[in-house]
Image 1: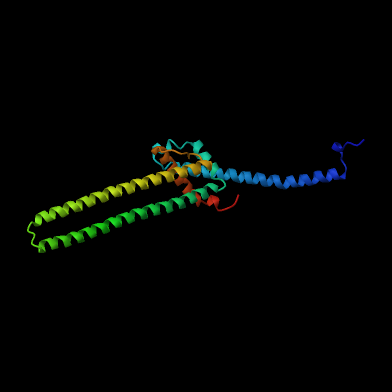
Image 2: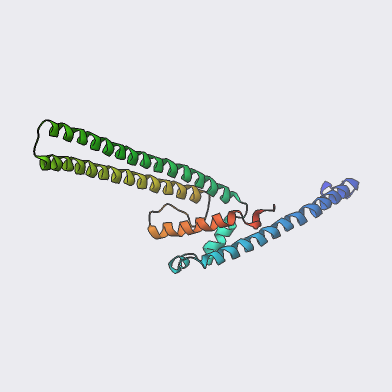
Length: 219
């Protein structure tokens, strides 16, 4: 009885030949792509090492080779660059909105002061025309009113600024979550000034590499 597993007829030989041809085409392509990836990783790693030399010494100590190598690996296909660009666009829109809100508050306060000065001038003129003699008393009363308004405006602006800071801190946390989930080394949720400083350096590195010639040609 013939054994199908050891059949060496024309069909078997033809299949073997076709398979060999396929492998001969695929394997060199895979190897070439792997080599290009290795070359790109080396180039990215070298660039990151060079960039790390330019940061403050206390930051350099927190940017070990292992972190830079892992970061280079995460940048290979360019996806992280797209994520960072998207986050940057969102941040710019958020910041513009917050600054516009602050400008509106400042303008409203300025308009209120102008209106108060106009009203005080009219009141003073009316009092003097009605025979009031104590000009110093009028001036002191109006000065107290103006200072009270000024103090109220300062407190309001402090509240606005604190709200802006809180919203920006929240934005940073959201960015940390996105980058951590994307597997970008060095990113995790933290409010530590030092850790945030390191993450900002990493983002600067990524931004500088985004338009690098390393990514002008496909793998």
